[in-house]
Length: 203
Length: 330
Image (cartoon, rainbow over all chains, first blue to last red; front, side, top):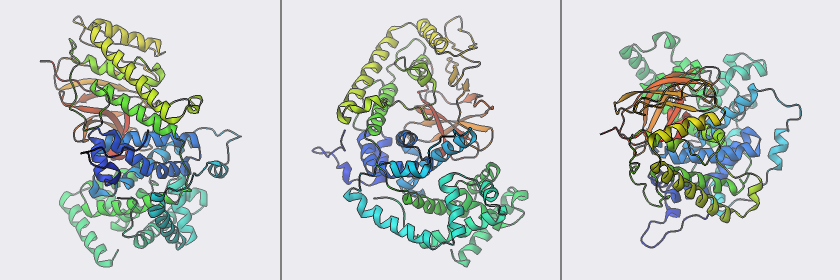
């Protein structure tokens, strides 16, 4: 399958904004979803993989996230953020649910090292489109994260990428719960200030 | 955020709390306590009771809702710091095959490129509830998969072995096979008598290894009741009389969403995507719950899903299965 090209008399979906595409997808146009998939499947997959550290599970999540977007696209509201923010929020919820479920189950002694798994997954390179927005934005975000005090950054990353609650983080770090909450609050506030005006998305 | 803005929000919230006498006990510790929750919420790091408290609050507090949205936009940016990785092409093939199948299931037509037509009620069955049953239990799928929640992590996808076929060919084949099986199912469904379909359903459930199926088939064949200990699946008790409510829904295989045991069932309107509350259910340790659906029939629902109470169904709803609620009997 390839991304739908504009036929004579039809709108060029490839040029269309995300919000319009998801609107069309919600109306039953699978080609519109295909364009969105081409734009964001790598971002969703990379993010899911970062959280679950399991390529096969990340692939299943990728399919599930876009299938939900297909089914629930009508629930997306542009006033609440870009389409990708919405998509990544779904991805986060689903991936964290998986991580938490897995944590409740006994771990196999031969479980693979997450870092090794991540390093082993191929990156086939960025498309030109990716390079335009993703590369620059990623640098900006990394720069903003780099300005946080390490303890704020650690608390945020433990929650966001490992699915730990504030309470669990406090226990793991041996810090008072209130301290962890404060670190998160200050860290997110600082990121908000620095990243104001930035949002994920092509269009 | 400036101090002025903070003060404005503070005043708004205090006013709001006084007006609504809303959760005075939990807010008594001050506005800073609510602010504490926003970052943790955006990161998904709150305990269930805190999550519920914040979500209750933002329902009636626009300033806090904006605060949450802005924080979530920021956390979404963090997702981009994940190392880049490229998904294999067969994920896309499987996804769009699944979409084609769901379209065919829902409309009884081939996948369309343009806007989806309104639900084609071409299922001229003696009893209007039967299509919902037959379309939600595709005979072409193994029972374990058919009864797994569609929102779970058991999506239909080609096996690893199948991935050696080139993606384009695989996609075409999968879609074609999916459509053929759907069409054959539709033709078969329309040809079968109502009683046969009910018997089929019951035997499929039994053959699928599900135990303790209860319920009865009414004298006029108008009731199907696969209730009881239906493992890892979705059971229905359909009230086919066309009244507006009272369909008992037994759901199992519900994922633990980490927010307690109280969940809500939502039906999603196809045209608007709106989540219509269809009843609450309490989920037991095995992920099973029962509810009496309070849902207007004759609307075009795309699916049913389940979300932890207090959570945003747009974000959290676990899709049970693509299904259609049929029109009421004339």
